Amino acid sequence: MRTLDWVDDRIVALDQTRLPHDVVLLDLRTVDELIDAIRTLAVRGAPALGVAGALGVALAARTTDDVPAAAARLRAARPTAVNLAWGVDQVLQHRGADAMLAAALRIRDDDIASSRALGARGAEWLLERVDGPLNIHTHCNAGALACVEWGTALGVVRALHERDALGHVYADETRPLLQGARLTVWELAEMGAAHTLVADSAGPSVIANGLVHAVVVGADRIAANGDVVNKVGTYPLALAAHRAGIPFVVAAPESTVDMATATGADVPIEVRADAEVTAFAGVRVAPEGTRALNYAFDVTPRDLVSAIVTEARVF
Ligand code: MRU
Image (tube, rainbow, N blue to C red; front, side, top):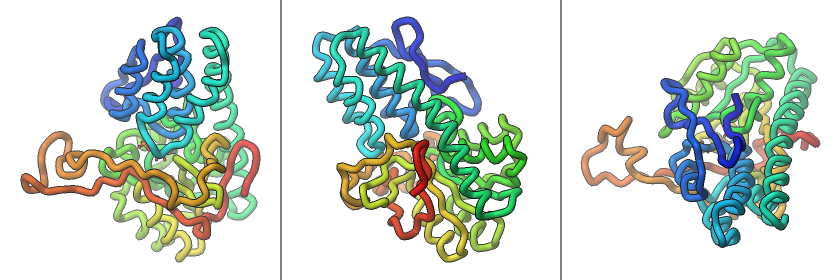
């Protein structure tokens, strides 16, 4: 099953807010419906957001008179993953609804090919340095659910698994929206990979205790200098990996590399609603009136990154 796709005249997407308990497909027939799905994280993950942006412009060309205005709103639905704006801009370069749809479908197909290619490249990079089977630590969800299929960091994990070179995967739960506990663990179980869920705050200890050979994560944006922006909680893993002397590998498509943004400090970091932290599953846990600083992403400085693996290169 694809995470999102174009079917007839609409976007069909797996509702990731309902996983792992319910597998529900959303029919997104307007740009506003798509924007709502992106804001609520029903559709999420940088490469998937790129495809959503591209398909969204194709949808706008069929459903609105003012495509540039709809595209601008779509571009602004979430600020950090550069793929969203990239996907929108790619399709906006074309004229006419049919050409726009064809361009968006190419971006969808390219995403599938990129995930496979970078997954294989990342697995080979690791196996050249560490004898398998490899134990991997990952954060958030950089799997098939964050792309159209296959995944980036979990694409590397899948490629290791295919080569019988995967040991055990440690997945961070990923506070506050639990993409690791809900989505990554679901994908690991589906692929038959041995795995264990850990609280985010335990991640650095898993690394310090020698339980993993490498950390592999995705990225929402890679700045021109190589700083990596990914789900909040990635930076502590990079610090721990550095201290432990194990590889910290970032797996992402070229569309995540943003040469127009100089450093991680220049990337807009999404700050989400206090209630995602002060409440749990809709039930308030912090005293009424508590404010939360809910950074959705953090910056890992480039000197903590061993390798960035894309479909085209390792750097
Ligand atoms: O807030 P999300 O769930 O969209 O954040 C997703 C991540 O941070 C992923 O690690 C990143 O997009 C890479 S996905 C291949």
